[in-house]
Image (cartoon, rainbow, N blue to C red; front, side, top):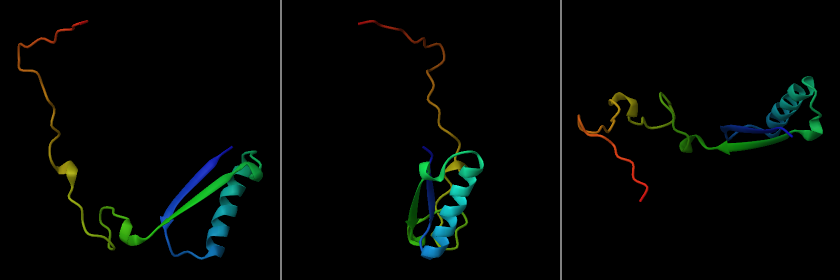
Amino acid sequence: MPVVQVEMWEGRTEEQKEKLMKGIMMAFEAIGVKKERVTIIIHETSKSNWVFKESKHQKQIPNLTSRPPIFWQFPQGTKMKHSDK
């Protein structure tokens, strides 16, 4: 049984959501899945609760990838020991 989750901003009409759901069901029918077997879950979120880079609607969040990654290393010459204790 396919489960489709749709994440989108709130504000679409019931007719628009119905059209979306019918289109999703048609896509599954095209590959041989009966529409009665398809479950669709729509999660609507307000734009104020949705943050992404270059958003006109949100505050910018810091680019966390601009810092080099931190990797912990054993000091040179140190060997790991395995203990079964």
